[in-house]
Length: 375
Ligand SMILES: *Cc1c(COP(=O)(O)O)cnc(C)c1O
Image (cartoon, rainbow, N blue to C red; front, top):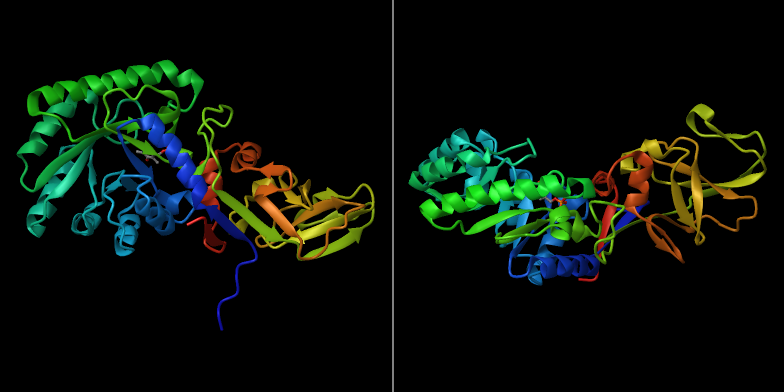
């Protein structure tokens, strides 16, 4: 017998991703567009999203966080070049090079590790050198770029394909000046290095924040992530016409009427002050609905906004429908998305939790079926 569908599902509207990447293309001008599909495309399904983006050429490059993520795409037949955004672990190096994935080199040690594996395999490894201009995560300081590049250029079986930095303050207005200085420092190092050895095929620095808000200068590629999925990294800025691609939908499994004084859920943290109807929804923290939304979050049912009441359980949560509700078992519940005139976004959820839209969509667990529409 076929497996039953999960009681909630995420709908990914690929046309929304197309529209969002069209915004990126426009801002990028003649630069190449890399689309970050790490973390299963921020929860949107890396293989399906990558296939769609490759088929229509909405992006020229893809990026992943782990070698396994890159292997998954290669095995699915994706042919766009794939950049692994962080250095590969030594034990993953052979698989990474064999797959054709582009590797990030952060210092002389990583360069040596890549080169040794590439020589042994007899395969030329293509690398992107990471510069740390202020993120403090990976990469070497701008003033050491020329030296590492020269070493890489002399290294057997290594081809320098790109150089990049990552901007930690590009998504907030107060980061404007810092980001401008960072871009200057990085571009100065790149320009000096290029004077010595000729141009890097690819120079890239812009994440979504910089694509939406900064001068992209003499770079040749942008690295879009969240913007492609329809969110501005600064939820309070409205810098482009973006369309959230993911909706999260479930349905009511139970409705009951409770009396004043009746309590709901583990810990009995919510008590009815009047007679009201309570709906139960088969989604919980195991699906990625943060328990932090207990007595805080909202969902859409019957075309209006209703509060989550009581603690969110592992597999279910409860909603106060109000005394006069005509909602019945089977009615649609929208956790993220639109219903009638109402909209709930990952940003709305993120704000209640003190986090960002990225974490909300990434957290929707494997138990939740994905359905892709708009191919
Ligand atoms: C994830 C990632 C991106 C994309 O970031 P967004 O803020 O989602 O646009 C770009 N560059 C690097 C190095 C990343 O790790």
